[in-house]
Length: 168
Image 1 (cartoon, rainbow, N blue to C red):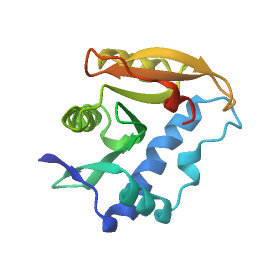
Image 2: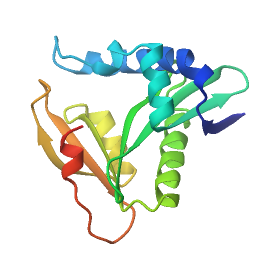
Image 3: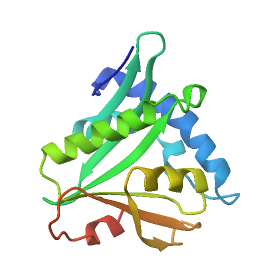
C-alpha cells in the first residue's frame, strides 16, 4: 500500500538513489551536454534539504521509498517545488500524482498563494502532465542551456510576486 510522509534524515540515501534514477531519464530528454544538478547531488545534499525544506516521500510496503518531492518557501505567498522524481520502474502508477497532490495540500495548508516549478519546456509528456494538474507556463528562459519553463499553480485568487522563482 502506498503512503506519503515527511522525509527523515535516514531516508537521504534512498531518496538520492531514486532521484538519480528519475533525473537520468530527464537528462536524456535534454540537449546532449546539458547539466542536470540533481545528478550531481550527494546523500549529504539531500540531508541538508531535509533539514531546510519540506521533503515528502512516497513509500510502499513492497519497495520502500519510490519517490520524493521537495518544497521550498520562496516568500510568504510563494512556494517552489523541486527534485520531484519517481522510480522509473513504477512510473504511471499514480505515485507522482499522489506526491504532487500531497505537496499541493501542504502548500495550501501553509497559506501559500501559488506554487512554482521549473521543467524542460520541450519535454512534452512532462509539460502536459503539469497542465493536467492545472499549472500553466508563466515564462521561459534558456540560461541553463535548454528551454526551461517556469510553471505556476495558483492556490488562491490573490496577488503574488513571482520574481523569487526566477532565481531558482
